[in-house]
Length: 268
Image (cartoon, rainbow, N blue to C red):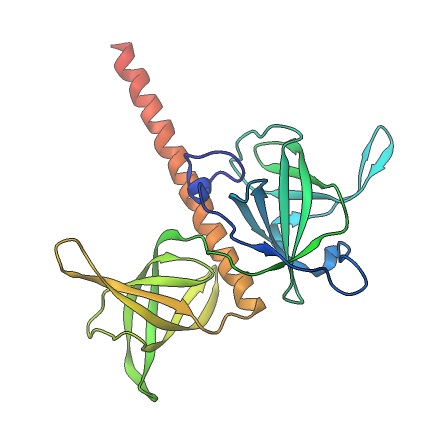
């Protein structure tokens, strides 16, 4: 999915999503200053609020940089693969998700754009605290999971043999689980386990809806996470990032194969 402008590749399946956040009054004592060590993850949006990029703390840093032997402050450097080229000096918002739970918005500009690196300068080290009203971006997946238990009407049922299932899409807010046997009901609470990298994550989700296909057959369950703390939010952000990266690489490979096939056809 393109990180900032691309509308076609998988990094940019984020395409038209809006961040949906509202600014609220500043904290007592004035606007919060940039606390680089307290940032858990960042979101980059266009000036109109369109979500462009998400990155966890493993993929960004604040290096010391110099231009014409003069120090340049508050540059965030985001590392990745297959980035498209972005216009220099394009205005963006950087929304920092803090350890404290606050979300703080800063104004920035793109300063350097490479295939594997993006630098953004934060123009003002004083940000604005934001009120959370966001919609979570979902990515398609084929993530295997197991359901080890279900709470229904206040009673917890633990399975001797966990139910194997597939997560068809995932976001920081929830998952869509492919239909299982036996079926669950709306408002059931499920104990869900899946892997993020080599780490096993235990999640609790609530079934919000049972979804049918166009032909009336049962498709699956739309669920929301009920136990997302800052650690799990970071794990889920990493999972979404990794899926996006894999999809981007697969798309690039398909594009390369199609171009090679077209060259062979033209050569005949």
